[in-house]
Amino acid sequence: EVMAGIVVQQVMTCELRVNGLQCSVCKKSFTRHTWESSVQVRQRGDNHRTLLNLEQLVLKHQAHTQLIKVAGTKEGMDFFFTKERDAQAFVSFVKGVAVVR
Image: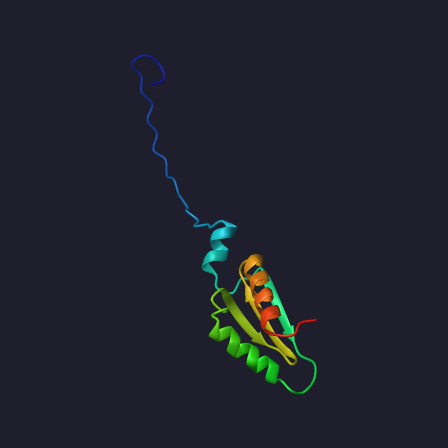
């Protein structure tokens, strides 16, 4: 109502666009390949029996429950974790079952 008893009407076309966005924490939780910490295990030399033994111990003691990815390299393995404290727990496990330098 503009003035007493006078009403102004106008027809208008509106376009609405809704973009679905996620916060960075939500993006990380729904993306399986994002990692925050990695543990690199290397063995010098040609004999990789120690790495095979470590792999069996990881499975036996269920130390792999917090892993999101394992990648093999020429001299060892890379273990990827979503949280740094999970990586630190894995490092302490490896120190307990293998000789670490």
